[in-house]
Length: 74
Image (cartoon, rainbow, N blue to C red; front, side, top):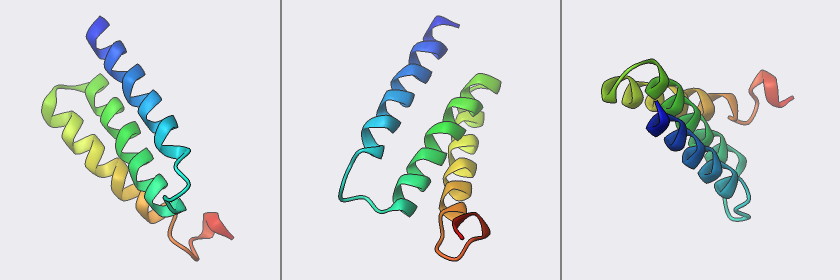
C-alpha cells in the first residue's frame, strides 16, 4: 500500500512538472496528464495490466478532450 502511495505521489509531481513546460501545447499536456491520472487510478484498482489500461484510456481521454473545437474548449 505504501508503494502505491509513493508511486502516485511521484506521478502527480511529474504531471505538475510537465504542465509547466512552455514548449508543450495544450493537447500534449492533456494527453500526458490523462495518462498519468489513468495510470494512477489503474494502479489503485489492480495490478500492472490495470495500470497500463488506465494510462492508455486516460491518454486517449486527455487527447480527445483537449482537441481544438471540442465542446469543453469553447
